[in-house]
Image 1 (cartoon, rainbow, N blue to C red):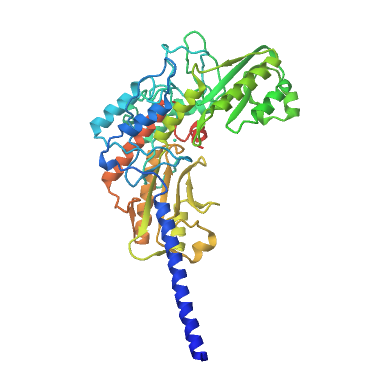
Image 2: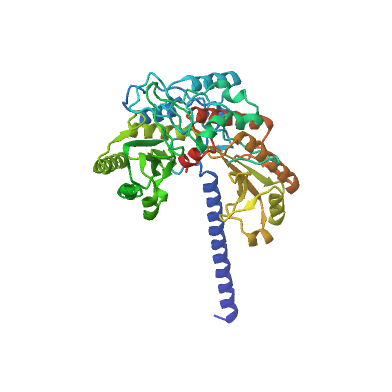
Amino acid sequence: MSDLWMILVLLGVSIVLAVVVFNWWQEKKYRKDVEYRFSHTRGDLLDNEPTAKPREALNQEATQPAGAHQSAPIQPSISEDVEGWMSEPRVRQSPKVEPDFLTDDQAHRNVSAATTASSDKNGLNLQASASVPKTAPIKTAAVPAAPAKAPMTKAEPAISPTAFPTAPVAQTFDAVKPTAFDAVPADDAADAYAPQIAADAGVTDAPLSASQTSILPAAVHPSMDWVGLIDAPLGVMLAELEDMQAEVRTFPQYATLWAQSATTGDWQDVLSLDAKAMRDQTPASQVACSLQLADRGGPVDEETLIRFKKSMETLARALGLTVDWQGGYEPSQQAQSIDGFCIEVDKAVEFHVLANQGMFHATKLRGLAEACGMHLSADGRFELFNNDGQLEFSVRNYEGKPFSADMLKTAVMTGVTFQLDIPTTPHSLQVFDHMVDIASSMASSLNASVIDVNRKPIGEVQLDKIRQQLKNISNAMAAQGIVPGSSHAKRLFS
């Protein structure tokens, strides 16, 4: 065989291999793109599919035979999804529920039901009620479980030059007033939430019993935290709590230990103190221990609850004291109820800005983002924060590759994705409108279009539907005594 034949054979083999490798690479790229687009469970609110079946299944799992305070399932007022807008940012898989698209009258009736009931469909009883016996009434520093004002909901994009705040358990899913949100103008949303927001900064009155109440630390929420109070009328030195402090730190869930000063009445975070600081503190007249019952990872398991109770009671008994468990509920059932409610309101709003023809330069995108006050984060997203330093929404690369300083100098791209996390964003309706305004402005400058995740153009009708869902979610969360974007909401949806 001549050299020419050898060269031709090698050249042919090289071309074939190059084609095979290129096809493999292209297939891998499109597979990743498909997996990314379908990575979240989304429902289509426009189909008007009934949600009774999935909701009933969820209800049966969350509410097994419980105490007298549990009631029959009710139909929630929140549509699970809005086509091309809402997704579920939960860490674990949750049942897919097709959304209910309600007319204005139906939505008002459902929200009204959600504001008047004494317990939600999951059996979560977060509302103070004289008819429900409590083992240890509480005057909580958390949030009033009464009709919600100025609800916060998670909605779709909106762009406006305003600062955004950066979604929830209630004692009663039915305790949301239908007019609570609608009756409050957007500008007055903060005032409407004032009583609940104040609970994050101090202690508010939320009596669970007419005869006796207890004051809890402001950071503790009696519905999402299983709280035990240890009364020490003769005082207990903080140095004597070292064993209890060490034990609380062994729990992977959010657990706390607080001591109330016998002189000032202020609550001190015992977990933040070292041995020397504990010896220098004044005696405590009361000690509170708590364990968070659920988060995005799911409810606390029965074994952990038993271990927490047994260890706290054993250590308290060693000091000659007893633990008075608050709430009047079975903690394992309460954990399931909280988790079921979280599944319903834990939503995210997202949409895309895609180039109409070809691509646009990343440098231009960076200039527009920074002009709107966004900053490039360590994980490769542009993020916008409000004046209080709370995240409002983020913008990531549509193709999935994280942004970097070097990449933004030379790359061209097809689009970006805007995302707003509803439960952890305060004033989410205003933030949504602001996000939409910014996205529209960017689309105009980049010769692009604003579309949903199904590549459908976004119009005012779709925006109004998302706003209604945000209102419903905000009302439901407020009815549970948790303000979207508050410290309690961020802890629950972490």
